[in-house]
Length: 317
Image (cartoon, rainbow, N blue to C red; front, side, top):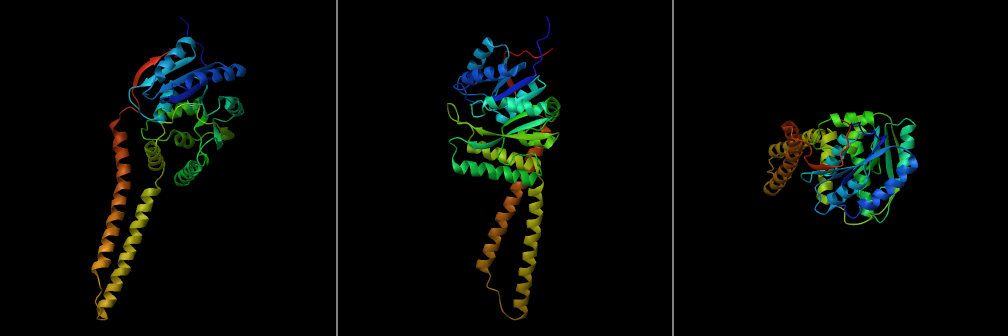
């Protein structure tokens, strides 16, 4: 039996509770890719959804041989799902986009054109997001700007980008990296190669509610900062020197007052100093703990995700 045709483009979508969006998204992808004239595949990774997401994927895969569905054995997060999709992708390039319809498939030809022009990574950089609260936009931009500054990753998009294209050499490098607690977008930015950006307007979610909770956002922020920056540890050292200097200054004041025969009224000020120093030390220990935990987690060698089952998998070999 001959091997199936290797696709030019692999479309990778992490999906969590997207049963109401995937069928419509499939129709839009078919129309866009038909116009491109390129061979393609669609890899949908179900991040252990609680609805009928995998059943929808299996139904679509039964009708369209270009679809591969993967269900993870536990909810591992969208970034683990993306890494799973990239590990499965067979194309010369892979395009990662959201499963809720917010990333318009109609923008895909622009990403492909930039790749054809020589870019190894093409970011679709958000310019506006329909129906998104102002505080969410401010928080997103602040986080991306902070991460960009702390990590020194100049390729990170200031406005954020979850919709991007990576060429085969970049896919191979990302697949070879074994990091568990990571931000895929930061990882792609760190890899290097020629990277460009195209601007686009993000749509509103087509149906259902987002699974991108505050807890998951905070976890991603911590993984991003502690995974790509030494600055928190440097800040701890700087704060330690500052506190030590203030301690010496205070000690000098106490000595001067003692030599002058004036006792220092101390109970209230002493308690304030103890409480502040105790709080600062706990924060320092927490930051150190974040780094130590990640080192321990990486050393265990556990897989980033566990696959429960597949459907429509037509990988070569």
